[in-house]
Length: 239
Image 1 (tube, rainbow, N blue to C red):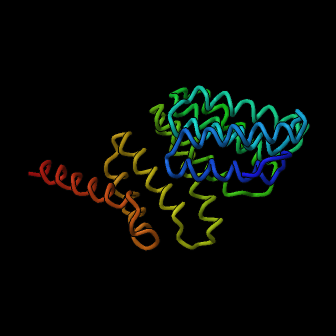
Image 2 (image 1 turned 135 degrees about the horizontal axis):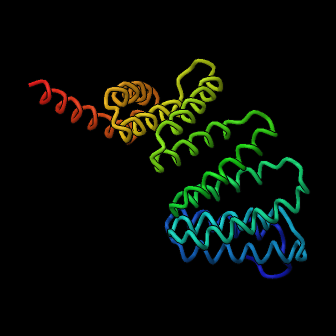
Image 3 (image 1 turned 120 degrees about the vertical axis):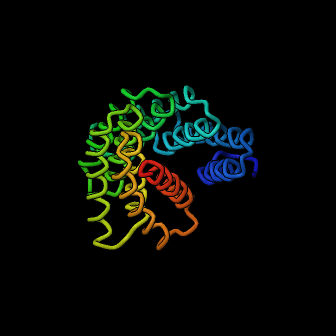
């Protein structure tokens, strides 16, 4: 990287390098490049709030999630969220919605389910202020997964069905991996609730779509293993 005056181009290169190092699991190099980029963006903005600074804070938070330092991730996400809110001045912002979603997922990893639910709901509320987005469906799925882990299976099913309805509207009657993933999650939820027959039913629906669209998806093997063991239990019960 060249010497001399700070520039957005150099900061962008540093951030891209960091992303690349993260993909290569060279975590120390990734962190170093993110921090250099963050410092440069701050100099460029002369200490003022800026989208580039906020986005790099989000990238750093994602990096800390990758190395399971969830408290640090929370710190950087909250800093990014505060900056986005200052920039938007109360207006709709997809960046705010995304950061709320990221924070919720981080709290989910920290097993702080109540906080996760709160931030997911804030993200949903923000997404709904903008154009209809696939992110609403993904967030509904995340809310459902959170309820699943809280063993509130009925609430989880409610949100999975809302996500499924949105994904089907988006795909306009075609199959999609998002639909398969939501069906798979419903199967997990039914399994956790002890409803094996319903679990098998939705797992088979998911399996059919995975085989058509994503034949290397690891959920295929998981479903097949479950269906096989479930069939063995049914056979033994009938004997």
